[in-house]
Image 1 (spheres, rainbow, N blue to C red):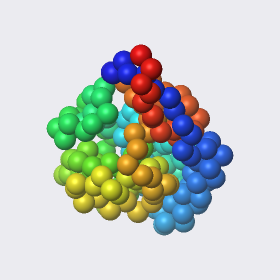
Image 2 (cartoon, rainbow, N blue to C red):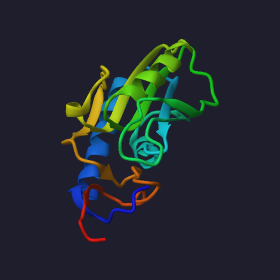
Image 3 (tube, rainbow, N blue to C red):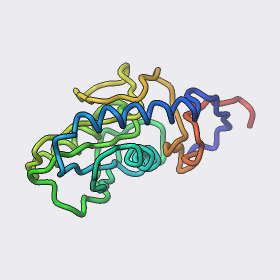
Length: 181
């Protein structure tokens, strides 16, 4: 992690996030109303707060599982080399799978995870991402649900970290580096 001083400016308030999570959950509940086999897969670590809030609002029985993939390490830039650090514990064959991601940036991590999940023959896979940075996209990713489109800013909060810090913020903030040493 860099030791460059920074401040965090609020980009999306906790209230706006809560309202959007509730709206997404209603759409997801309606979309999956015909299934009793929904598995919600969170991409760790950044999605853990989002997935917890989202599944509490989904009005269906769900199973929750996690996969941890990384292309960032402790820095700000994607390395584009995706590593699976933790795999699913359960089976997804023949199941409806909702992949929950904190932020879609270049799309490389999510594309790699989807390739792995598709080899397990789920009935269908959809994506829900809290944040989307379309200007950074390098790999095609089609998320059915997006919480917020955001500009190309480095963001933290609501589960998203910078060097393992700031995950606990209740809002999404953009990191602004200062010249003060």
